[in-house]
Image 1 (cartoon, rainbow, N blue to C red):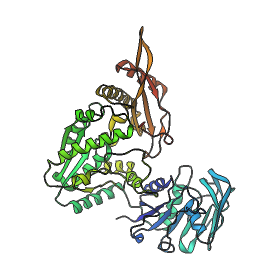
Image 2 (image 1 turned 180 degrees about the horizontal axis):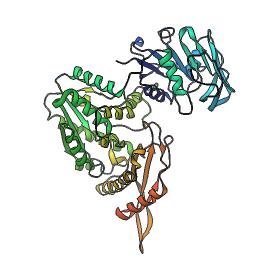
Image 3 (image 1 turned 90 degrees about the vertical axis):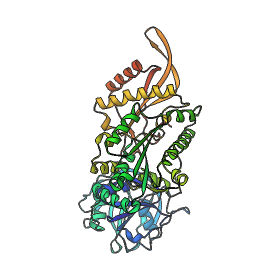
Image 4 (image 1 turned 45 degrees about the horizontal axis):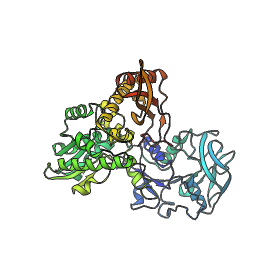
Length: 509
């Protein structure tokens, strides 16, 4: 196993971003909540304390026992983490006279500081806190200041402890990656040797050791995660891998046949199950978004279970779970607030009496793609946009029937093919069309129409945790709108969604 970094999560919205920046340095890291430390802390080479929406001065302050780490492992405290190191080690944290938020410049940097090696005075940083460190902790030294924040950074050199009141993980901190590199590689002496290739070889070896000669069942979705998981498992267990691809009738147009053919061309043992009618019957008159997901999840489990029973002697269920799913399930306040449920996370193993294996559970989405490249999986699969597990059901607002699915499939096909034909598809994280539960008046020729409205959605993102809407060219939107209205019966109006995440979500349901 590569040398690894422990990130203690105090509930900051930026915690996952810290992990991503560490991974970008080819260093493996894990996020663990401050209150769930059920592991050997000495298996890590360094510790990063995250920010938090809480105050260290509050009775609700989140506490992490430093006795096993202080003086033993290098520690970097970020924002709340820095204030925690100060407040509980002889320093003093007070409420700031004004909220310290946004861009700032470090006008003073200690020239001999290892943490700021190669970083010049005047570099831009990003602040996001309402408390500030008034008095530094005992035995510490001031190493950086801004015009408004005197104690912007400090160090306790004998214990290799560093605190910074800004966020090095965000894009707006110009030398944030350099600072993290200084802490992890120079100070903590961690070797940056965690790569997609090294992960793949270790994952395959681990699967072989865990599974042995036993049979594994995997549900394929056509997406990147399950596809990469399938190839990893196939390399590890070969013919003992049984893949099940269920058509819920809510896939993109022709996707079931196309993907099934593609998988078989990859040498995977794939069982295709067309359950379109079953799913649509189950969804009849269901309109509430969360209930749709639960109905689809229940139906998927039933179909999947029936097929899996035909595979005699199977001992393992594989899932394409990735790290954001894992992080959500172990958040600092218990499982994070449910925005939406996922039919592919949990439920199946208990019902099916199978042991679970999740070869990708410590990877972010872009890392999954890198592993796929290392495994020489086709770019056609790796570049595929994320697609929701419940499929088009959550892109049809309101009730669902076969006619609505066909309308949306036809619209979606025009939109996605248009993006590809105009070299826009690969510049976008996720795109799709939404069938709205409203009709509007239109005119075609001399006839009045009263038909459906379609919303188009395209966002750019790194891992889907945050997303910005894509500024697609007006000419493209004009052409696609015309194509949709002229070629898809039942649609007379097209709109474009220009909301970002947050406050909106990527999907509408």
